[in-house]
Image (cartoon, rainbow, N blue to C red; front, side):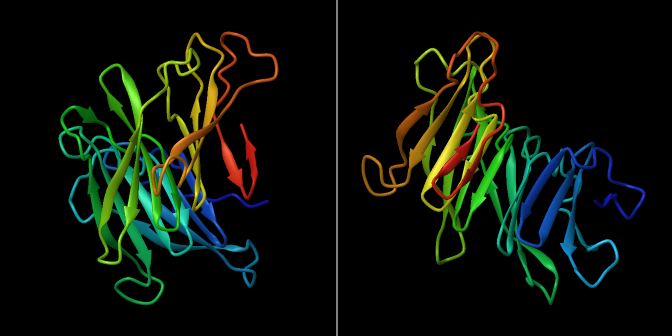
Length: 239
């Protein structure tokens, strides 16, 4: 068991957000301007992890940078929900961009429906060329799906709104998990028992990301907050 800490005097809010894939760990420290620390697993070292890179957006003084982080292969997504006058932004970094072992910024994704929708990036999930992000729309929250294109841009392809099924509450999208063709959205609610919604890439049409299943607790009760955290691995989901 190893204890990781920021290697400089900054890092306020260290570990409020975590993202891990393979040998790469991203740790968000979003308090104030915010930053993200990237660690690399290295079996040759006594503690097995080495400091790799500290990330910040190309724009200066980004509000709450690192509120949510997600790692997939050689790509890291970092959110800053307070950026762009509160509409939110997501920054994408890729390994070796700008030099060996560097993590360079390759994209900045803004909220596609601002100012109606704000705070993009409250939660994130990233798998390959698919990115999911939660945002606020009026009194409810919604989830956007972005797709990476061969021209290097990220395009919003779907906005998923909470169903009116009595489970959704006000926290739809509080937890997200994704694979290349599956998405699970946690919706723990406030007074409802909560639920998790499974969406499939080609459900209801190519890249339509339709809802395939609603998951609930075995014996649901008000205040359960089912869906507070979610995870996906292959054909298995944990809620």
